[in-house]
Image (cartoon, rainbow, N blue to C red; front, side, top):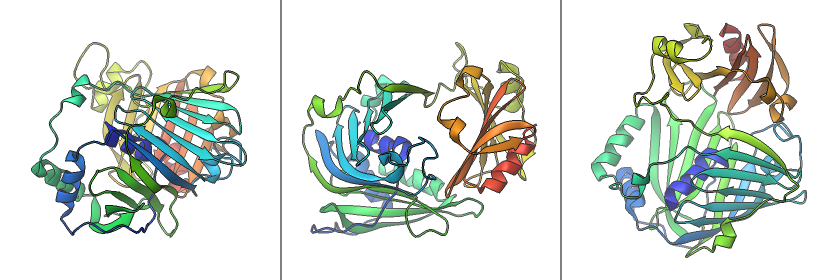
Length: 371
């Protein structure tokens, strides 16, 4: 659970980037990537983690998401991280404009931005109780996964190194195919504990990470509940971001609903699914809870269109502050970054979110094709 929580925070919510680090420790011996990953996944879990971290954000335009250029979420900051071995954790980022507290458990992530006195809440999908007793992957399982991953990414490493004075292995993944703004994903982990120490995303043409969360100092041992159970002020504004991922099942059936015809029949709104957008053909259609997910193209330059029955009560909020774009006569809002573009709009009672690791012009072209 501890490693899973660390990966979830680095890769999913607070995010990620890797910077090369050095330390006074001794690098581990050379080994294969499969062996290094297998060792990390099967290493005994520490009782907890306490670390000093540095978070760098070069991704979002100043004030684009939270309307506050002083927020540590936008400007980057240094701080502290605490992890327990039961899936809870907290990152505290310190800023002159006010700290940011990122707290998570197996069921929810909350982000309290003191600079705006706002709490952002995101519910997490339920996990199976069987996760505690699952058999660790074998070396063959890891090798099989890496072989499949290598179909889409060039993988280098593991490079023996030292991160936060710990012996560590580092690896880099770069897309094989052109067409996306992603240059590479770089990760490093403790060679003995298996705990992630650095993780990062780099954009094409940039030497600096788009996002970075790097451990500067780390210690292992039990973490007190008070370090991970932080309650925001009662007068803070609360923004509910919904659920990170809903069940891929519909109703009481246990069969995933996939394929365009089945998805169109099961959705409670008129699905808009052109054969192609921005020159990319429809490759996947899936009903995820009450949302339709359409994938156009293949990794890494795929474009994803998410559709749902529109709810006029949810059209305001931080997305309304984004630049406006015209989408077939409807007013959309666009977030353009060096790693990709997201556009959201509503039309004829349907809400749309289009995302892809593509330039703004390509995303806008794709949005015009969704009709």
